[in-house]
Amino acid sequence: MGKILHTSFSQVPEWTRGMCYFYADEESGTERIRIYFNPEPGPANAGIRNIRLEVLSEEELKADLIPGGQFEAGMLPQGFWRPGWKQTFSGKLTAGTDFLSGNRSLEMMKPEGDSPNILITQPLPMFPGGKATLKFWAKASVAQPFVTVLDFSAKGQKKHHYDLKRHQVTTEWQEYTHSASVPSLEQEPALKCRMMHVQLQRFNQPGNVYVDGVSFQVTTDEK
Image (tube, rainbow, N blue to C red; front, side):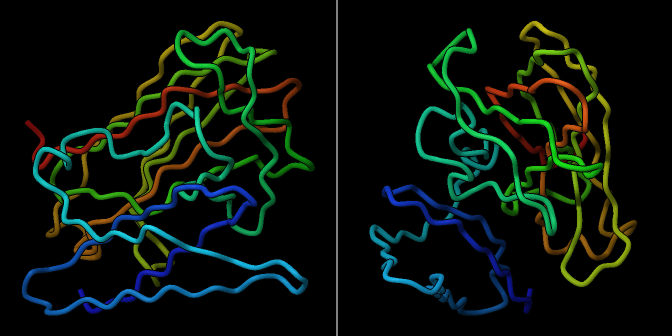
């Protein structure tokens, strides 16, 4: 769409898969992808391998679009999650949470200060006039509120469309769902970028929140 999409990845010592989605209009011509290394000062080196560029099929667009939502491999942010704006994420992958599958879950710890502890996905595909659905499992060591946000922001927007849902997480594993209709292009012309983000937010409450089985799906219409 003639816009630049800038995506950053946090690097870790182990080889970790990173990926991002972007929308390319068939009529906009050739796309250019640039990869920049910007390591911190010091003796460390940065490396990259197995670069692939693929067009998503219709079946893939209808499937779960969040990679590694079971949190069984890699390290946070797994090349797909990042902290909230100007925040340091407090969390880790932890074992022994008695989730119904796998060995690890995402542990979101109590944030420092009054700001929530937030994780945001890299840009995700969506369809104007369609529907977006986030599903996840969660439990907490102390029951507490938990917020998810379906954020339909576009670069350069000061005000944009988003859908927020408050959940009450208990001390037992439960599945939670957050669905929202996506405005049409007539309602929100800025959605021509066809990209959005998902946010997970916990607050300054006692104990830890555990998250697992995160998935995200979109449909092309509201039916």
